Length: 387
Ligand SMILES: *Cc1c(COP(=O)(O)O)cnc(C)c1O
Image 1 (cartoon, rainbow, N blue to C red):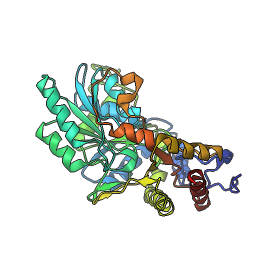
Image 2 (cartoon, rainbow, N blue to C red):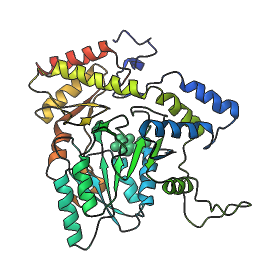
Image 3 (cartoon, protein in one colour):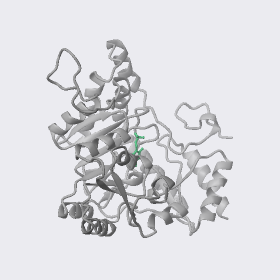
Image 4 (cartoon, helix red, strand yellow):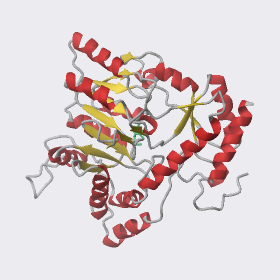
């Protein structure tokens, strides 16, 4: 049994070590209190404005930020801003969480899945270009590309962006897992035409549920807020008038208060996750069965989750089950979208890379509130399982 169940900063709730639990700083409550005191218990108010400014100050003064009810909602609106509609084709990274792809379906459009390369585990530039040429030959020019910074590792932006530019296809960067990462000094979320963030409970910072769009133009932010608040025609003051279908996707002012408190500690959360990764690497590197994903030159990953590759499905399972037996949660890497039953009829361009990652990979507990004694225990269980 863990000895630190009583510690408020420990993630050992119910004696369990979780993969990526929330990590509250304390100041969140100050902003929550402000929302209560001012009675702005609504999808508008000072915390929303404040959280958007905090994100903008952190990311870049050149961008606009719109905070929303979830990362999924952000992707849905990003596609809508790019004019995606019924029958359009959207090229989408296959190695990801389903929320990257589902909004394509919400709009009646068609996802086409692209496999990953081995350096970052994100969209493979060669397969992307191959797919674009294939679709153009069929008379179907893809309308958008959704690329992901998976587990916090930025995608190959120089290569992917050059292809997108060549064929004039806009890029949505799903940076839900990568707030705090950088690519040659540029922050994740700023690498594509539109950036997406998530503040779900398991992400590097959280609002319990929430997301954001990072936009390059003021007009796009206005359109986002219009669509996120039921598409009310602005010229009608006396009644609600609608000429378009909208959504209820704005973030709550209460939850934005949690976000403001979390922004105060974002840098700490990034260094804690990176330090977890370093600790695992320093201690597990000696094992021939364990392989880590290195940061290529110029890449800085927030190491949202520490992932390892093992030689086989069986060895991976033996580690996962040994950890579970000690009430420690680990998780297989994402099952690629092109292998999901729900997408079995969608076209894909794959070479087996993400399928192999799915078969051999494991995410280890990676919370920023993980204690060194937890890390040591996890490492010793892995060593025993492999001996
Ligand atoms: C978490 C996540 C999302 C969705 O975010 P929600 O806020 O949970 O809707 C999208 N893409 C990726 C890669 C994610 O990990």
